[in-house]
Length: 326
Image 1 (cartoon, rainbow, N blue to C red):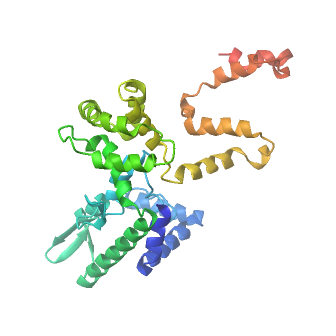
Image 2: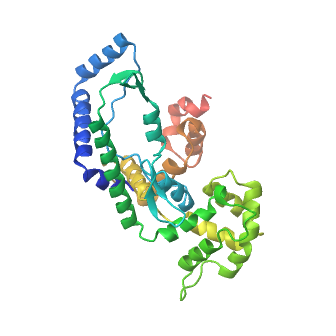
Image 3: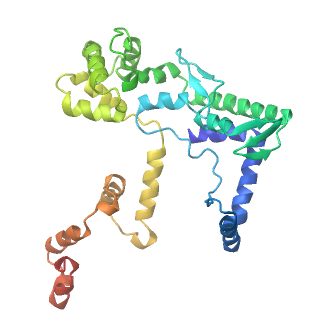
């Protein structure tokens, strides 16, 4: 998704100029500690909120969420500002924009022919408004085209929305049956061993909808997968397996990139001889372990001390062991 957004922005010269301008401002202050100090002094004198310097990385924060495929369709509905999927699965542009765009418009006010942004008078002409609308439209058109190129089968992609707990009406008996068949045909193709029993999945669909609507309509998809596996696997076994299979389908390279970043932080030049199994354990601790504030270092040290004979705890040093002083 990050590549899609960057390519869409690269095709518009005005966005590239904006990126260079913001990048120049960032570089002007970040490359000089004295300029940063003067900037802080200005904040104190003017009694304004501190401004944190951040590198201009265009659209880097707009990434696909990691809560599973059913969470992706609502994401694409809000993508960029107003990039939507209609009921037929085709992507289109809405006029209302997204939450950030709506917030931007809410901060603009007009009084006696003058325009104000957050109370500050700004110069706005009709040509400037038309230019902004044109840039926005071109960016969204390019973005939609890039998304469609990367997700050519939008029908299959939008079919996963039926497993979003907020989209399951229990009183509509036919809701989701066509989408369920589309998903089953894709995951259980003819000629390959099916991962679930398709007929049983179709039979379990109605009780699954009633169960989710009555008890879990406010839960996320990932929470629903865990609940089904822990509490309802005996009641809806095939649906539980299908949800588990859908939840592990990778839709983003973000976790992979994050894993490499963690590995590089662990295996530094000074730890070049660390073994692969130790890296795996340390990476699991960093990714899935509790926050460092909740970790009991004294308990870990005590286990380290008594696990085997260690010379460091023999003789005079053993009385200075922190775990003995607690």
